[in-house]
Image (cartoon, rainbow, N blue to C red; front, side, top):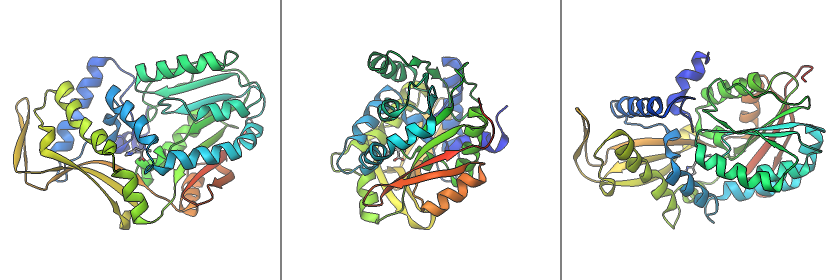
Length: 334
Ligand code: AVI
């Protein structure tokens, strides 16, 4: 069973869809879109960004000069990989929640002593499997055990060797949850990994508005394409008749909530239909598509403590823009 607090939070969870058939996934997508467009503030959960095109666009975002989180996090991971390797110990299994292209995990696998297994969990199956095929060639001694699933749901891990279980949740995806949902998710990860496990999680730090807004509204327009791709996906998979050129990408810092918000703004008054459902848009009205929370280290650590984790270490890049926390769960473990 999914804890209620977590189930409720799925409306604002980053990447997911249930571990279910394609038809069920489409029905869930349709229901989420119909529900979200019926709200006073129209919204679609950000988990739906990641179809094939969206996953490719996200990979491009990660290479953008304006999008600092990836660069900063890689810099941090390179510097602290040896300490994470020591924390994991020999024969550990690395479980990545929302593995995407499985790029950063190489830094950890390189630093670990004889890692037993890599378990990527991701809803975008084809994208994940292609990434795992590439990884398997580079790490022939590591068992690759991909799990195509919604990592926010009650995932059951495959049988693993006796070494420590180490969770990996990079990229500041934790910031795509509300703080309440993030706390529930971190507790859920603790339950999935079990007693004695460790968790390495990347989170983005609060900083200047200009730096943040440029990262989510880049000069090349890739983030705009990523956001607008959601409408193309809704048209294709749910049968809507969105005219993507009648919407524009908007990203701004909501300082009171310490989060970047992404929206799709209607450039004119219009109506959009999904079957017999019709949704009126005023000019300037938006669909809220994503929150990306920016934390202070203290606020983040309070949250992880609340979720049952103990701090092992926190590292930041020289500019203090991004942070990686290594956490531990009490107990005997495996
Ligand atoms: C996946 N997630 C951590 C990204 C973020 O920064 O919130 C998604 C993203 N949205 C726009 N650019 C990147």
